[in-house]
Length: 93
Image 1: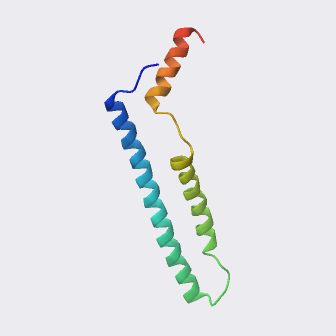
Image 2: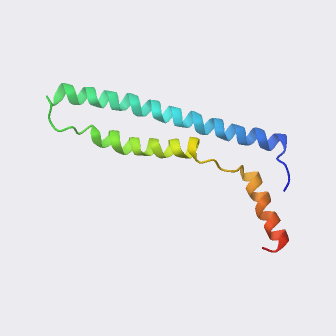
Image 3: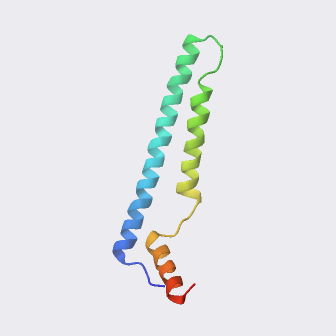
């Protein structure tokens, strides 16, 4: 198996940084939008049906999935996966 070149390492690092920034952007939007929805609910419903929970939970689930993809699941860089598959083909697997 071959080593990654400096260019491939930098490209992989760029992808990871972008994924983290996208997550933090989505998380920030989720927090702000849901605070606004809770304020609207509290000013208009006087304790009625808590409709704000629907977008809070549904969107929150997707934020959680994105968190797991970005920070928990560690994937190999694509260049290494391609090289491993090429090696298997060369060996006749």
